[in-house]
Length: 115
Image 1 (spheres, rainbow, N blue to C red):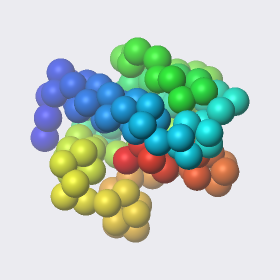
Image 2 (tube, rainbow, N blue to C red):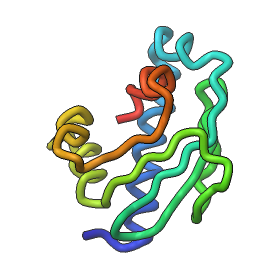
Image 3 (cartoon, rainbow, N blue to C red):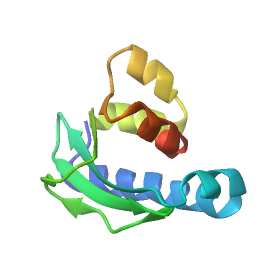
Image 4 (cartoon, helix red, strand yellow):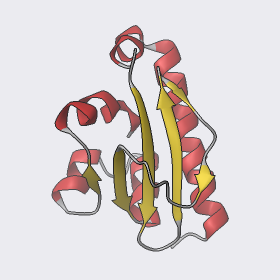
C-alpha cells in the first residue's frame, strides 16, 4: 500500500501519460473535443483527489473530493499501480471489482484511454 505522496505521484504520472497520448493521437484528441468533466478519484486506502478534463487538457490534481464530480472513480493504490505498470488491464480491474466508475456510458468511452 502506498502513502499519500506516492499515490499523488502515481496519479500525476498517469495523467502525464494520458496528456502525451492526447498530444500524439489525433483520434483521442478528436474524441475529447468539447468534452469537459470534473473527475474525482477516491482511494479506499489513501485519500481522494480531483481534476478537470477539458478538451483533452488535464488540470492540476487537487487533494480532496469535489462536490461537482461528473465522473467518480473508486479504487485503491495497489490497483492504480498495477494499471500504471501494465500488470493489470482496466477491464480486468473492473471485472474483478478492483475499480468502480460512476459515469454515463458515453463518458466512459471518452476516458477509456486514461488507463
